[in-house]
Length: 494
Image 1 (cartoon, rainbow, N blue to C red):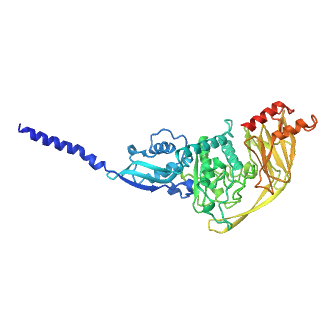
Image 2 (cartoon, rainbow, N blue to C red):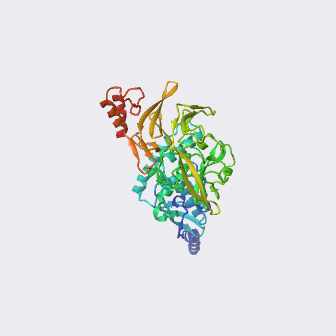
Image 3 (tube, one colour):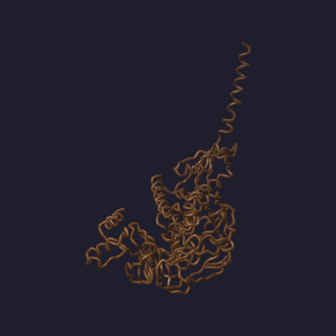
């Protein structure tokens, strides 16, 4: 009986020993933080802590994957205890996840954490969201629908250069740079908003500043399996991309290749290619419309290769289409010519004019920017008012107050007159009803539509065969009949 108190004492000591970690390590504290987000205008790469985003990220074996899964599902709190992330590192990790995933546009920079003071590791993180769950899900539908529409421009026959070029040209053809500057040319926060800086703004209404262009291009390139990262210049207050082609990195600046940069309008089909697949030396060479300085890529890579510093697309100011492996674009014989030709270029570099030339008007645009020392610089951009788009298996060209179609026939092409415009065209594109849309030089803020069904009705009410117009001949059989009408009505309803 005398041993019992000793056994009880030993048992009590063991219980205390086992319980000690609970008292010591079970104690938690709360803290708050603010992530530096590119989608909110951040241009300091060191603060943004990108991670060289490459899809897909679906192993869920890292804290980054765990955080992404929690954020994309709008979790109120994400448990990351098992990853032993230091309190000192969580800000960088959290910023990196959001900045590396353009589809997390609805996540705010503010967050709070629960952590263990004993181990200085984060147990969980509570994000903040800009949108409610239902709003975010609806916005994600818009995001993915817009991304799928862009990716539909690409097909499996294209190589990586052609895919990168097609997305580059598509983005420029549908988007414009919103006016976020006051009357004195200074940035105005009152005219700006977060959507201008994220990929969602591009896919929603195609109105974004440089960060929006850059993040959307990253998302689309990585969906295509082409490594693409973010480059930022705090001194320029600007961002652009690096993409990897055949093992080498190249600069791509979608914003500066957008003719509408700072114009607050979209002149559809006007696409520059001065900053597509260029080296660092080209970008910093102080030539062309703009030069670049102070750029810091988030992957630390340099664009050393000069392979495409001089390329056929450098002087092309129309959209370039890749069809069946060949390139199609408008190109004049020389800079001073009043004519431009629709050309086909094979991968080997053989060029062919598809039809007779189009008369085009040459106009000059002037602009300005500041160099790395803050000194004002000016430039003059010569624009050729000839635009190109592709619809219903044929090309359309707007030039010299006319719109034409160029149709493949047998081994060649036939050119047709479609209509006459009231002024010189400054833009030509396609809307959701598969109708042509266009701007004219003096009415760039007005968008006009060529109603294909009206062209069809004009045909059937006129004397038979007198007014054939290629535009409503959807199936290219040389006649306009009920088959064409059915296709036109289907496009209108869908």
